Length: 268
Image 1 (cartoon, one colour):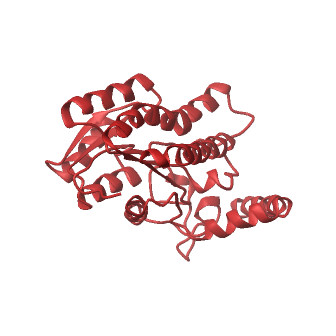
Image 2 (cartoon, rainbow, N blue to C red):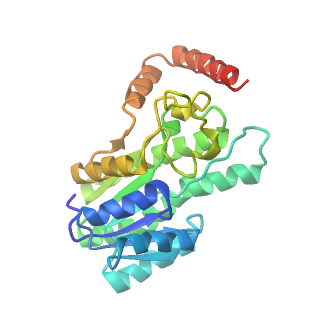
């Protein structure tokens, strides 16, 4: 897809990958970027970094009506959304001990938000001849997240939705990419990554292959949009892990159990 002259929306644009993507989209030629975030003050900071070709809005991605309202407004004011980056997310540790509402909220942000975006923008994109969806999942959506069951489950669901959209809407002019990184230097990583002397972490699952800067991840996403490449893997190791999982599931499960035990020992 040619980004030049396109209108883009980026959710979770107040920091991290979202902020970097909003900036990179403008650098790649987007005529305007709408920076959306639950924390509108951080979205304003991102828009101010970009300048006249950006604006900021408050947006709760779990609110379907809010997403639909934003898209309808942009259709009237800007002629429609060409690129929708569904990027908002958060971290939460735990598993069966978590309340159902905590599981539900993570599914709302990591799955329903992508569905809400697709429902809102795809009809207009098809009418105008095409468009692009980029959703942020995680390597956890291809592998797992040892310390967070709802994170792993919701990110798997996000990848599955992106797959389905790519299969069913490609011939109608809709491009789809899904981002599946490991550790990126964002607010989500937070205090869960304790650095070792080698610059990697010694007790955080996602950071064992290093922590990438958001700008590097954003560059990979921009290339994926231009090349219309589905799977975006900033950490190349993930492709190997994913292949190992597919080739021998039992061996992969046993390896993950051993990996879990090693991480627990490092924390003690």
